Image (cartoon, rainbow, N blue to C red; front, side):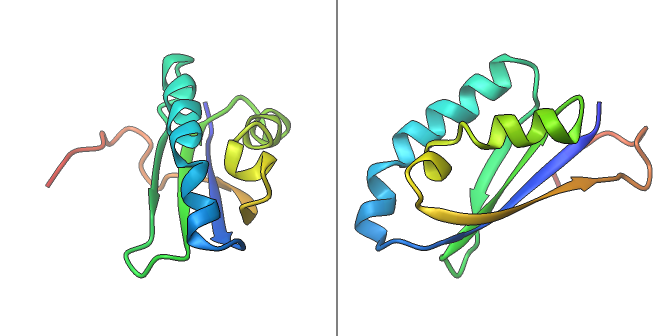
Length: 95
């Protein structure tokens, strides 16, 4: 299954953004429960973040991203990219 990355930039005040973070976390958890191997985080300097997940196609990835509460509530602008691994057989590990 291909990997996709949603790279985002916040476009609302932090107080507004923070109201939707719990719903975003629930959304990411639902992706995981659906077998999407999703992981989400924010840049250390704040102001944006990234969501990495599996989807069967770009169209499905777009549909999934459009369900993110941060998108639904217009908290972020984003770009969606397919991420191709150099060595897809290599496992992810913690350092």
